[in-house]
Amino acid sequence: MTQVIACIDGIGERAEAVCDTASWASRTLNAPMQLIHVLDKREYPTEPASLSGAIGLGARESLLDELSSLDEQRGKLAREQGRLMLQAALERAQKDQAVTPTTCQRHSDLISTLEEMQPETRLLVLGKGEHGDLLGGHLEPAIRALHRPILVTDRALRSPKKFLLAYDGSACSRKALDMVATSPLLKSATCELIYIGPATFDIRKEMDEAQNTLQTQGFQVNTQVLAGEPEEIILQQAMATGAELLVMGAYGHSRIRQLLVGSTTSTILRRCAIPLLLLR
Image (tube, rainbow, N blue to C red):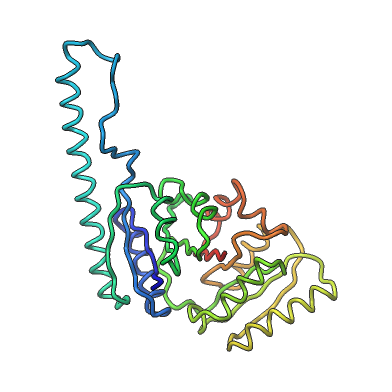
């Protein structure tokens, strides 16, 4: 059974936004929701670091015991904090009527945990911070490692009325288009479908076919073919159209691919003022 997975890594508005967005997605997709918190084993190791040779022989044993005790206390406090965060998020999800919400706490690393859970993941919801940071900088590795839809948000997203879909005609973007068309997640929203490039006959035909794919599934669609740098045009149109969500294929073979490879991933996340849904 596939689930909506929500990563909870703190308290406050970001965690609430992730929880509320995942609850909406869970209801809309009629999919169970799981809230996860990963205690990074690199920050909270189960074994104390080796200090052999760093301190004098006489003091070594007692100091190692003390350091081990402190590490154990830090680990216990971190686990308890995570447990409380998950409990608060669970209560919020239950109030939001998410489908059978559950919690999970792991002592591992985030990417390995998400890869392990990938077969049962229908949608992954992650939170981003004020400057586009996410879960200790794990966003790009997560996008590269996972082959599931990823929704990145810094605000609660509930039943968006309009979304912007960046389309380039590549196999990846056609797959993203089909995923949007056949999923109930955005069924009630208007689609602003844009292509960035020359307005040739073939491109117009491609856009007509893409528009027809969505309209056949009941979407209201507005299309535009625009010239300019993809990153700038996408960000401008996200604001100009009043879209509440930006939808893109995560990887392709066109200029749009450059947006999601390397450092420009963090750039578009930092500058985009609305949530971002990446489809693989």
